Length: 99
Length: 429
Image 1: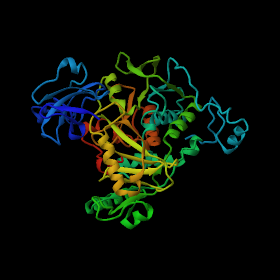
Image 2: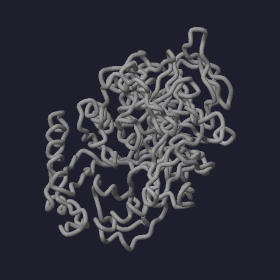
Image 3: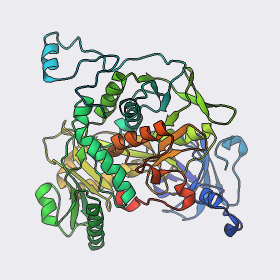
Image 4: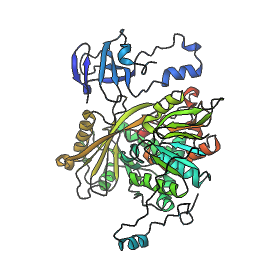
């Protein structure tokens, strides 16, 4: 059970949201130039830290907008929420969770 | 493989039998020998297995019994069987769609069928059958196709119609006007359940008997590598332990270990919850799962209904999930089995499962020579315990995967040979 603060709607139960996994993954600029290994990295390999993690959430039962959350995967504490186009606070995210 | 009768290792434990039970009754059961030792870690081993769950203990047992590698340590940060081995819903089956999956899960099921005798430990293995329900015309058609594919691999399975399901599961609601009506299903009669704790304990006792050191309360904190980058041992909370052969079987924490070793895995750690009801008289003597309504049920020998569902959607290491998953599975349970609506939930819990993009496991060499990973079993590892340990021991002993393990290498993600079992796995993977 988590209380997630949607940057547009305010604090809501986590049942209202859907999960989009790791945030800030850029699609390779030229996919055709990727090696198989690089393309596999982009498709399948994600960080999976035990601790603060920057991830995407969507307020499915509310405004239906995507946004970002820094959440501690070990305690479920919501450390920061911010809009698409914004960046996590390095002091909160720490060394882990960055791609 | 060692035969039960001949297995007599350095510790020379007496066999469990009805005679031993009677003999020990005379001394009020106060003189049973400990099932395994509690040794201090030695400075070096021929092989180290990181993770003392069912898969890790099975790996150690088969390293010793099949490959004769007896100087083996199992390092467990908590207590053996205290992770997902003790948290799953104990369902065993091998009715998977693809040939690669059929091979490994059927290998496991065949080992299950002789395991209680081999380990001399009552695993309470019960081939009570596993039924998967169909709730739509389309699902039923897809199921017929899957049944034929499974039968082509020599695995027992058959389609059931609604009346056939009702006959096997009298408490099921077959009213066709409900939201997800039961339109049939398929059954694997050789599937069933086993006592999950006993699997860890049985493998631990048998492995210990062959000289394996089971070291609990020993957390791996880093990996040692030599000048060439090959594995040389592990740093632990109880000191440095050296070995040129290390196998990681850490389920939910696999990615944490991989990060310590300096590479990434295509794995996400997710909570998977389960719950039991208060105990009642026997009402269901098989296992019934439903992919469409995301719920599966069986009844334990104590009488509790054991219910499982799908994973929570988000990454977590917290061994707990959100209540809406439980609400969802109980709503499904009440619709399919109306008599459970008045039952109380006795307890709920969660475990952290290591989910893979293709819902298939990883049994693989790694970028670090001598370091092997067995992970990615996601929500369905328990059923594979003996097969997983058996082929992973082979991989660790020989340094290359055998025919069963080969398709499950890490290279499949860049090679494009995914083994997509999302469909066959359903929720009750």
